[in-house]
Image (cartoon, rainbow, N blue to C red; front, side, top):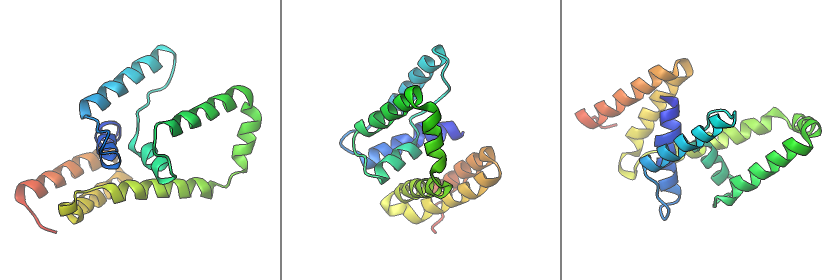
Length: 159
């Protein structure tokens, strides 16, 4: 459920909200993620996805095109190939609080972007319920979130 939510649904919503002039479909995101993972597996790589968190983080810190992840990837690959030991030492000099701030801003960016204008309060409430359950168990959180959304839309509860 986490991969489906983050790799397909969230990236579709986040991309189409941030870049309405370049919309993507669920199918396009799913196919590109699948192809990416088939290639990665064939060369010994790990499973990966586009990830809404990464997109939200890049946009929150100013990236607006696909060039930003390419530049970051190039820097990381070159650093790994030529500066692996010294680069790791440099990264260890950064306080963990910096990572915390980056993760907080990314999470806030995703939370602020959720919900349609007419239903923001209800959808944010459902997101909060799902997040609360995710602290305990992600699978249960997925089921609770889907059920809460279904109940909201089916029964029409107003918050």
